[in-house]
Image (cartoon, rainbow, N blue to C red; front, side, top):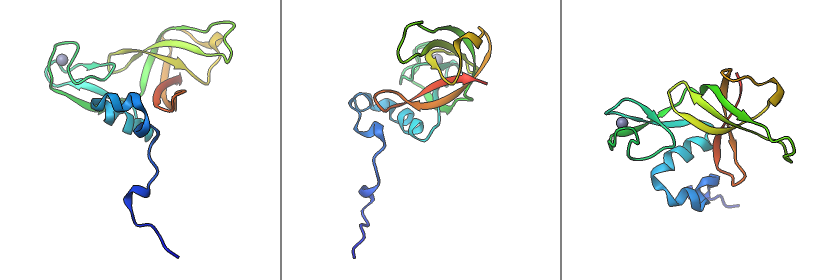
Amino acid sequence: MSQSTSASAAPKAAFESDPFAAAYPETREFWQAGAEGRFLLKVCDDCQRAHWYPRSMCPLCGSDKTRWVEASGRGKLYAFSAPAKAEPPYILAYVTLDEGPTIMTNIVDADAASLRIGQAVQVSMRAAAEGRMLPFFSPA
Ligand SMILES: [Zn+2]
């Protein structure tokens, strides 16, 4: 019997063979964390504000002094829409994160009729159709 001792035998995370993720190497840390179920944001060391989506330059002040931080995962429902005839059904939403940015997302594990603007929501990292792990939200 033989056993492989090669480190390359470890299974690749889905994002590693994803052409979209590969096209933006500056977002590798985001996809890596997502594959581990963690939600990262970029924070600017010059203006001290978080921004979304992740970029190497701060869109709020133009600084290139940005760093990754793990988001709290908490936010408030800013707006949502549930198309009545969508199949499968989904709830499109904007969520304002406790860190500041408002992000487009989907609400999961919820009935649209029970949602209220301003209610607390919590992140749930899930695989999007392409396999990349993205931040979805559910009622807190
Ligand atoms: Zn900034």
